Image (cartoon, rainbow, N blue to C red):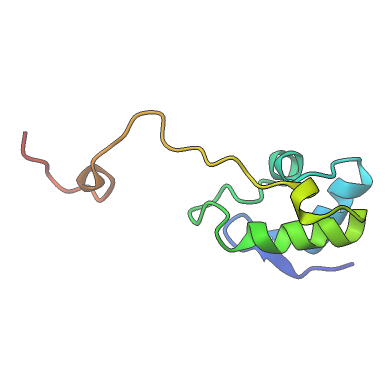
Length: 90
């Protein structure tokens, strides 16, 4: 059992990634969907490169074959002031 944390935002461990691989998920996008990896506030900046290395070693794929996550911006742009709960002048 490998409880080392890979994704701190979503609390995904090496064991979680290995279980997903055993279930047949062998690319970063599918593992992201199954585990939640890369969906936290950092949007995968820290964990995705680590996960790609883990997946590549476990599957024998190259990092390019493992892929990279698709960035998903907000559906509608918002002012940072709204996120910070500050008043916005119209």
